[in-house]
Length: 492
Image: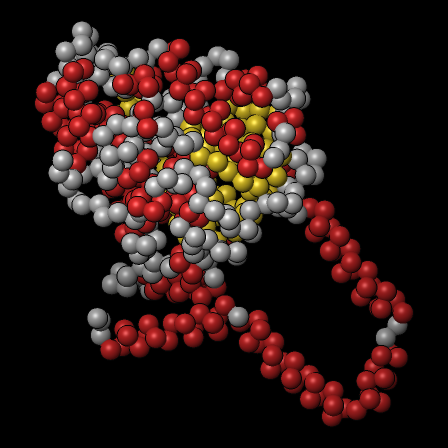
């Protein structure tokens, strides 16, 4: 419960926040009253004499200078960018992989010629799955249901077309926009970069314009979706007003099934699942559902440990996979610290910034290490949190570091349970969960946080303009069953 003094401080905190966050209004009110009293005492004669003393040039300057400053500000300020709508890939029942199916498949792969995975590796993956936070309805691409799994170019392209074309079709149907009206196309997929690129595949499929600006980002990891949003925002600043940008985020699983026995490289087999999203951005507010407030990117890749903590390589037997370092959570925590240091001053109210500054001074200037560093309460800046569903450990670490409640991270845990780690698209499945639950309100603020190789931590802040009218989307057939209880160790 805490000491009586701590309880009193907690009770006084709302008053403190109100006073500090509304400091200008609190200060201006008595000054305005004092000015009104002074004017009343002086009388109308004194006021008239003061006005007559002003020269015409002063009056002209007083009118022109603010007008010129306002015009300059309007010309130089960045254009606001809006989220028109988004659509997530809806997984299909024939791709579903329950634990028993996954493990039986892994056991049969041990008999495949050329594969090094063995019974010990299967037991290790069993323990990982039991503690992963994934449920029984996650999906793998059709190519992974064969023995041995298909990892060729044809199967990989088939997965790409299934995921991204389905998501784009849903988005075009929801928004009613024509493919010819899209001016900018940004696609991200880290581990599969074919020739022609994803953007070429999309342009050909939908018959888009020849002058469309298009970029395919690869190798950027699970935070690449927010990098793509930031890149599309920058393109929209120089595009004609009212232009549209299509952002597509996915990760192709097919060519990346690891058949070796290095434990650090088996974890992606257990966590990553099919998923993708298509997002439509515009500088036009018409029919917009969210406003993009901030995009903040931080990169810690200058250090060797951060650079190599998520590393694609071949093991000693030549099997290619993703090596996840045992220091991943520590490095992710450091990257998060750097990111919240950058985004905090941009989004936190003055009351939280003042408390953080006082704590910083006490620790550094007074050299008093006994004073605990103040952790800003980001719940004063955001109503909803979409934390990359990279795994149970990732969500646990962010919940602890940010001081969030179980409800704050519910969307992340449920997205991980229902869909698995869908890489850069996971934050959009979480936003869809919040909306399907009917929790989004006009004016609510959303914080998306993504992590990726390199090592990166990226954030995007959104403000809701118009919540979804229904639960239509990836959660349509399952939202009624969520949230579910997720045990520490799942026995099956």
